Length: 326
Image (cartoon, rainbow, N blue to C red; front, side, top):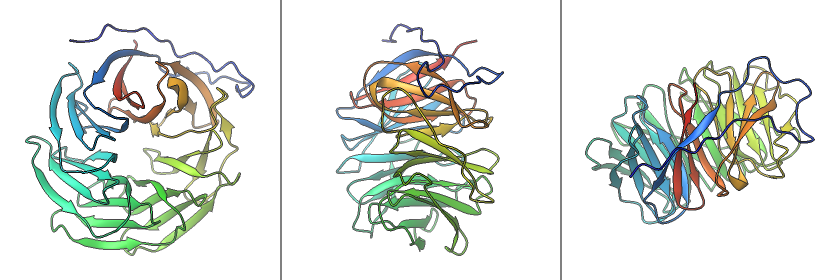
């Protein structure tokens, strides 16, 4: 049964970190449309399909679920992992779903049937994050042993291993042109890699020496947002490596875990503890508003391709869908 709508207004963050000047264009407002129940442990990963019609959720219960966004219906459960699922992603054509896990494997499933099509193994460390290249030919997996593995999707073979980080690589993302891969690590650095050669093009050290937990590349491929253990976001220019001043959430939360760009690049959304979702203005690097949801910590977040939906995963074993208000 669909849960009743809970009206939530995005309001400015009235706190010491509130920007002195609110952007002229206000951030979108969202309401909690429905709560997705079915996982038995933390929902640690969420991802929309390219057409925005389905949502994939990964959980510490070792499963990935596919949901119908319009109705909230549980479509199917994807199995094969034996430990917590840490990351999920749809292929650009929507045909495949990738899941990374603490069981050290990366699995691909057929999204339509739920059939397991390929299992990548070989690195004796947790798979922390997964990402498809924009053309869908490659899938990358970062590990707790500081490596990034890039696999050929069709041939099922390891293309190359990226080495250079010294600690867990928490987050990875391809640039829109597919030529570069960006990684954020516990070693307090961002790295830009050449996908074709595996060489490090640039290494950006965290200006405030905080751990980097999550990254998101802007739709135009010019900037990367990085969430840190200091409770803030950094916006860095990929061409120069320069990072703007760090703003903190100002809601008493020392960590920012998941972040995502809106498809038009105008906003970045982040999640943290106490159910708080913040919206950031990338041009100023400041918090522009927030949504206060249920008190569960937000472990994962995603924006639909049309920008009309937010999805979040919580430590209360539920995923949630938030709809944009007119």
